[in-house]
Image 1 (cartoon, one colour):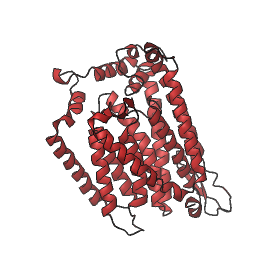
Image 2 (tube, one colour):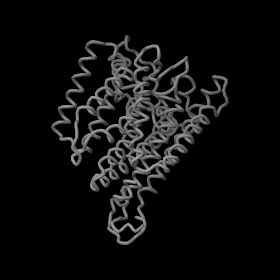
Image 3 (cartoon, rainbow, N blue to C red):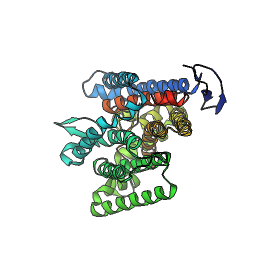
Image 4 (spheres, rainbow, N blue to C red):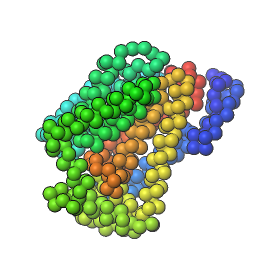
Amino acid sequence: MPSTGSSTYDDLLLIEEQQKEKETSGSLSPFTYLCIALITALYGLVILYSSSYSEALSNGLAHYWYFVRNLYAGVAGLLLGIATRFLGMRRIKKLYLIFMPLSLIALVLQSIPVFEGDFHLVIGGIQLFSAPSFAMFSLILIISALFPSREKRGSYFLPSAVIVIYLTLMLFSGGIGWYILGVILTIILLRVKGVSIVALILAFLFSIAVLCGISFIYPDFLAPVFESIMPVSDASFYNQALVASRSAIADGGISGAGLGKGIYKLGTLPSPERMFIFSSLAEETGMTGMLFVLILFFLIGILGYRSSRRLRRKGEADSAVIAIGLSFYIVFRAYMNMLYCMGILPFPGISMPFFSYDIWEEGLTVFSAVLLYRFIYASGREVKDAKK
C-alpha cells in the first residue's frame, strides 16, 4: 500500500525529510534502535557472566549458571514480543486487560511482609519478580488506554483512582525508590496525554505530601534512605554493601581492571550479579565502560522520545504514551540503579535492565524492548498503518 506521507528520518542525526509515493519510509531509526538494543542486551550478558561466574562457583553451580538463565529469559521475552506481531496496534494497547489484574495481585501480595524478600515477590520460599517493576510496565498500558487525551473527552476520575492505587501499592511493596520512579514516569505520560502543566504540578505536590505523610506514620520507610545517605558516618545506619560499591567504582579508574579480573565480586561486594552489577562493571571496565553503558541507554531514551513526538503529531496520543513510556521505563531504571551504586541517589531495590540477573526482569525488559521497536517502526508510517 503506498505511503505518500511517509518520511525518512534518523532520530540520532535529527534528519527528517518528506518523500512521496514510496512504499516504505526507509527510516533509519528502527534499524538504529534495533542495533542499540541488541548491543545493550549482549553487552549486559557479557558483564553478567564476568560478574557472576565466581558467585556461581562458590554456590556449587556451573560457572555459566546465571548467564544461561538470563539468556533463556531474554529469548523467552524476545519470542513473546515477536508473537505480538500477530496483534494489531490497537490490540497491543488492550493488553492492559491482562496485565492490570495480574500486577495488582502481585503488588498486594508483595505489600504483605511474608511475601516480600529483597524487594521481590516471594511465594513458597521462591523469589519470583519485582511487583513494582511489573506494575510500572502495566501502568504504561493503563494510562495509554484509560486516560482520556485532549482529543477524546472522558472522565478523569476512574483512571486517576487507578493511578493513585498503583502508586500507593508501589510505595508499600517496593519502597520510596519505586514510588518516586512511578510518580515521575506517570507525570511524563500524563503530559504526553495532554494534561496541563499546572495540574501535573499539583499532582506532584500531592504525591510528595502522601509520601511524607506515610513516612511520618511508618518511619521504617525511611530506613533504607538513611542507610544510603549515611553509609559510614552513622554506625546505626552503616551500609557495608554501599561502601564496597563505591570503592569498586573508584578503583576501576579510567580503563578498569579488565573483564573477569575484578576482586570486589569475590566476596566484598554483595550480589555482584544483581543489585551491584554496575559496580562490578565499573571496576572491570572503568570509566570507559561506564560511559559506554550510559550512552547506550541514553540513545534508547532519545529514540523513544522522538518517536513519541512523531506519533503525537499524528494524533496518536495513546501510541505516543506507550513509546515514551517503554523507553523511559527501561532507561530510568538503569540510571537509578547506576546512581544508587555510585551513592548519589538513596533508593535501593531497582535492578539494572539487560544486565542484572533476574529471569523475570530480563524477560519483561526484552519484551518491553521488542514492543518499543514496533512503536518506533509505526511512528514513521501512515496514521492508518499505525492504528492497525
